Structure formats: C-alpha cells, structure tokens
Image 1 (cartoon, rainbow, N blue to C red):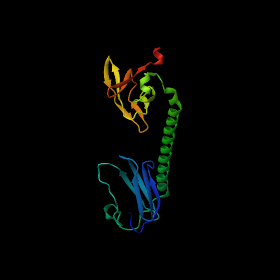
Image 2: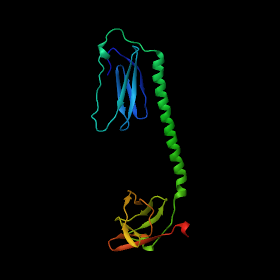
Image 3: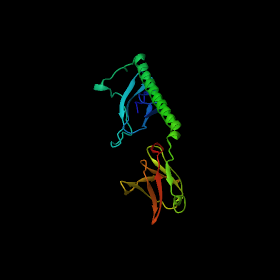
Image 4: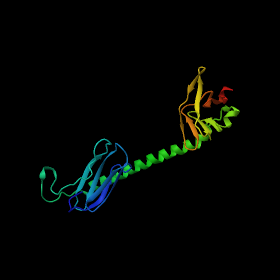
Length: 214
C-alpha cells in the first residue's frame, strides 16, 4: 500500500509467469503462483515516482501479508519536492516486463511442442509382447490386456480384488510394486519379464516374448 496521495498508473512485474500483480488507486496486490519464485516489481505512479521492490516466495518463511509505504519514508528521511523519473526509465521497466512475458510465452510454446511430439509418437512405443495364460482372462483376475511402452508395464483388469504381481528373476519370484488407477489399470515401473498374478492360492501367469528376441 502506497501513500494515499499516490495513484498507480502501471503495475510492472519482471516475471509474469509466476507472479500475478494487480491493483487500483494506491494499492497493489501481489500473489506468487509457484514456490521459491523471485522477481522484481515496479509501481509507476502519476506523481512521477516509481516504487521498486524485490520479492521472493519461500514456503517455510511467514509471508508479509501487508506492506505499507509511508509518506516521507524515502532513504535518509529526505523531504521536499518529489523526484520525477525520466520517461526512459519508465520505458525500461515496461520493456523488461515485455521481454519477460515473451520469454515465458516462448517457454510455454516449446513445452507444448514437446508434449505434442510425445503424444504423436507414443502409440508407436506400445508393445503387446506378453502372452497371458487362459486363466488370466477368467475370474478372479479378469485381465483384458497387458503391454509395455519400453519404460513401464501396464495390465488392464476388472478384478474385484487387486492381485499381487510376481516377476521371475534369476529363477526366483520377486514381488512387483505397482500403481493402480481408479479404472483398473495396473502400472509397474519397469518392463516386466515372465511372471504371474496371484490372489490367495490362485495364479495366472504371463510370458514375456519381445519381438526383437525372436
């Protein structure tokens, strides 16, 4: 909050991607949009003054909920006529904000392009290289499909009770950790070798048959 005699004409934030700066009259509102973000802001006033601040967000530090700038609080307590700022300095702040906004837009566009490229190529990465036992498709397992994408293994199942997954490593059974989505997709965090599903005493196996090994 600036002195009551001030009227803010322009709200300038260096990083508009992670900080939201608005306001009216002599009051500015600043909100961080990400943790550990930092930027500089400038409040350009009708009086010709520019109030500049360096701000940062730290999750563990208590926030400053209200910051008041009192009239006559300039360095050294100097009083007198206001010090007007050249138009070139105001323009520099505006250019700085525009450059930061352009950089943020370019970064967002690059990220969107990478995501779109990944989506376009992802179907080509899917490999249906598992042969399921016939019992795997029956109760209680009700497996509909099993595949991998070179990184994770996926099992689609309608089982009422989540089965345990075991993988055979060096001839020994190894329990497999997995994530389970609400719609019955089991996601193991690596490409599984031969193994089986188990519920109680019932088992149903699969064999891993990579095409490049045939």
